[in-house]
Amino acid sequence: MSESALQDNYVPEQHAPDPMISHGDPTAPGKVGIWLFLASEIMFFVAILGSYVILRGGSHDLFAEHAKALNKWAAGTNTLVLIFSSLTMALAVDAAQKRQQRRMVKCLALTLACAFGFMGIKAYEYHAKWVHETVVAHEGDAGSASSTVYVYDGHVHHAPNGDLLLTGYRAPLEQFADAKIGFDIHLVSEHGLETFVEAQAGHPVKEQEYTIKASNVGTQIQYGPWKNIFYACYFTLTGVHGIHVLGGMIPLTILLVQGLRGKFFPAHTEYVGLYWHFVDLVWIFLFPLLYLI
Amino acid sequence: MAPVDTADRMEHPDAPHGTSVPSPHHVVNYLRIFQILVALTLLTVTVAFLPIHNELINVVVALAIAGVKAAFVARYFMHLKFEGKLIYTILFVPLSLAVILTIALIPDIALGRGTDFNDMVGWFEKLHHGLVG
Image 1 (cartoon, chains in turn purple, red):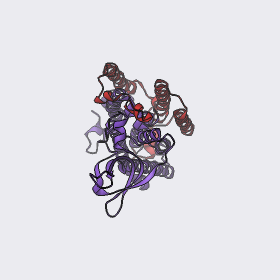
Image 2 (tube, one colour; image 1 turned 180 degrees about the horizontal axis):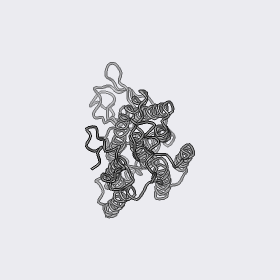
Image 3 (tube, each protein chain N blue to C red; image 1 turned 135 degrees about the vertical axis):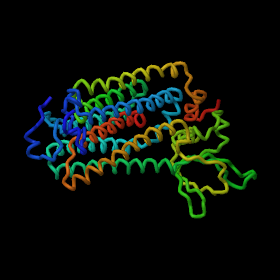
Image 4 (cartoon, rainbow over the protein chains, first blue to last red; image 1 turned 180 degrees about the vertical axis):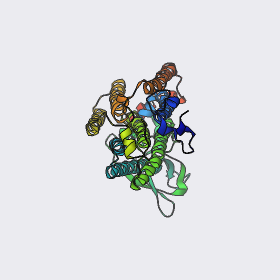
């Protein structure tokens, strides 16, 4: 055992070349550790992505239909944001290794800013789903001959008196029965309802704003994970990935603060970098699988 | 493997020393890799907007582009190109398990034992046409 190993402040990390400890393998133990962690992460993401592929294969039309409502532009922008943050992270590692404080701090700050940007765009996307609802409500006096039950799908705000202001499309519920296609609130999509209304009308129909009295609402469902199996997959995959981004922001912040204090942790910066590039790599697969196909 | 940089240790006695201070011998043009990744992202988005109605082609092209992008990130940003056997051995295990897992799940689709939504095949098609009967 080397003498240094007996000291109180022994940090194995910094003593990797000691052949007694590393058995002569040239790879730093910390790097082996982070790669083992990434190996377990690969299995984790393969498992949930594999489930997604199976569920998509089992309900192909449902997935294809509902994926249309996702915002390709927001997700595409987010792809570029993450790729750019990978660039700045790689440059931060390089700067840390060369002990260039200003450059390292600048690159770490840019990486962290991209992480915030990514989560901001993600929040915008989630919010768009949060206020998107399918509503079944009647219009006119309940039970009277003039009362009609409508299916609405669109984006909702609430008026001060609790009424729903919905921008989207609507079709009378009975038209579903007339067309013999059944009705399931979990399956209805905005695009589907639009094409249904247009097929019924025989011409293109624009989305409109409807005011729905709160007391007239029969049932309503938000585009959350409970909407259908597609949204369950969408929120699980992007949510788990988002948690990984949030998790990466913690060591990035620590490295940035230490960098501002003039401290360098080149090895640790490299390990955080490896994790960060992995998070980018996962998104590279999520983006086409969820948004593009 | 590079020898331990003793000169650096003498200059900065408090600095972490040994090979865990990665010495950047390999020069990577990160900006070039970034440009390639941006170009591939634009390509995959463009392909998505092309009127290709064959699902299989769409999926294969999207995954192929994603695979190339992932390879660039792993090889250059994650320095996999410059790693030794140990890291490749660690990676080999989950990657082969990933392939096995995916293959093992295929019969589930092939046998049509997916989800209850299988009953809904044609539902959206009918919805789009708004047809009676």
